[in-house]
Image (tube, rainbow, N blue to C red):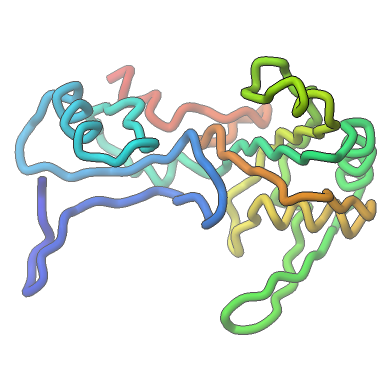
Length: 205
């Protein structure tokens, strides 16, 4: 592994668009600089053995130029809202998408900040909960709205909880229990609003 220069050298590891605190993720990306060419599969195995349970290396590719940061400008999120009927969630989403601006308040270390959530949300769809989603029969009998949304990575960052606050603002939607948010994918938006695999050009080189 390559290290920086100076009095306090540190590994050259760079996380790209790291997920906010309190959410799960199936799609995090990291750039690791090395001092010599290594076999990607061997590196994947070594990292998997060193990382704690629950953190898995899905794939490793050799970079062929270009900045990974420039290939990621949006994320797809899955937000599960237990106790919320899908129809109720769909109605709230419809109202949200019809707005030009939806401002929410976020408490930061510098005080309260107003954020316009609407421009960052590229798409938002409500999906039914499948029977193989890891819930028991009792859990499946309870309503659960699942929101799949693609959100641009803008400044300030629009997080899943900001999207939920926006639904509360426009439609009064308040889940009875905390929602579960998982980042499912990251990438660059194409002309049709779909996410492009940020490692695609490296795989094809």
